[in-house]
Image (cartoon, rainbow, N blue to C red; front, side, top):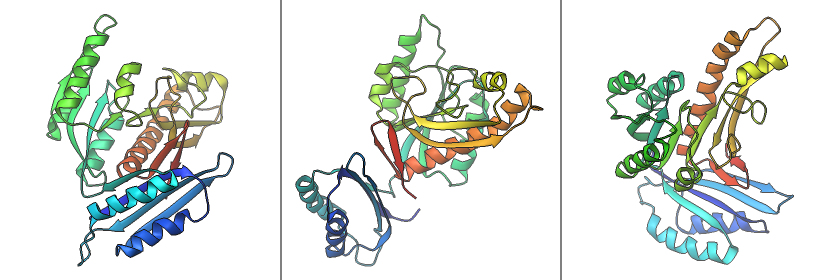
Length: 285
């Protein structure tokens, strides 16, 4: 992983924003690697992502830039994040009994595609424990019943805090998180739903899609909010089906979509390519 910095900005749109940011980076000697911006004309909002190298011979003064940019951001009403990509995000993986998304994420992590630390896997079933052991990741079994749900979430939150987790990934975790849990990790819990949201929410979307006779099935990765399956959408993909396909065929084909959209969403979050606003996302190239 190259040593670079990423600056994410959102603010009211106005003339000169790109020039102001680029000028300050130029003055500080930044070697810009990527730059992208987007305007929401209806809402009058501006979004920007800039990435620049930190490993040049004349090492970039990141702390000095942060101080200077804070002054500029205050003048222009910017919300902003500044991140060094050399630092790895700490990620916890949650799942229940379906292991295809978990296995895919762990393989991508092991191969270096996902630049993060995974200090913890949590499940309310034990099926994933051998997989966690194979990859050398600590596993925590936290069973959940209606009577123990509050205690189980308290245990999960304690584990996340102890391991310094910054991002929670629900890799087919078939439990609904409480609003209090979600509030602890705003825009930092990623879920995969086995449907092309907003169609067919809930636990059995492939059955519902088959009953409706759709010709496309899909999968959606989104940030979790207090409303079930209603958070900002990060990525979606679809596959064409026909009247010949049965529910089992939809499930099999859907699993590939689930792997793809979840891994993309996690990678884009780790690469700091996503900005949330309202119930939408900007995903930079």
